[in-house]
Length: 235
Image (tube, rainbow, N blue to C red):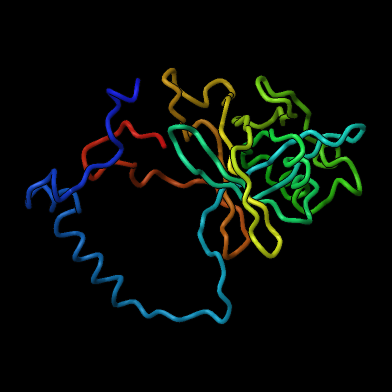
């Protein structure tokens, strides 16, 4: 679908909906009831601030090593920047070998794990390639990307091949790489024929920032665009 005919992701409610339609879009009487219930709950300020945003993606990042060194696999903070064009961001700490490797190669792959890979995921997160080959330590098999020059994890049902667009230094110890997703590949059955993710096809999991725990996805509770009668938005 080209940009000229693509349906806009959002509309301005005040311009597009009358009063009754706006009430429907906002959930009708339920909004006031739920808001009142939430407003009555006690709240306390924590002793220490923290980025408590559960859940966050649990993602392996793979990138080529230096000449003569093994390929690198790492766990980094990952987020979506844009759906169209497809862009993501990764925040890499100074302690990670991957930070300089991404800066060097400008290409990498994001590998989405499933719940069966929770232990290998933690092994990768808790160890350094300065000590040993993390692919071997975690029992993961090495693959090759289709478009970018970077390694992959064969066990990962979703792989995003990425090229760096922009680099942002975030003091005191992080570098954010914003990258274009130039290729996406999935195991058979993970997406339908139109490329829409079938969430129930695999046991994906995320990290709960604030408790440091891993949880699989629970039941579906809604979708993007439900308040305006749309079901076509994927990102």
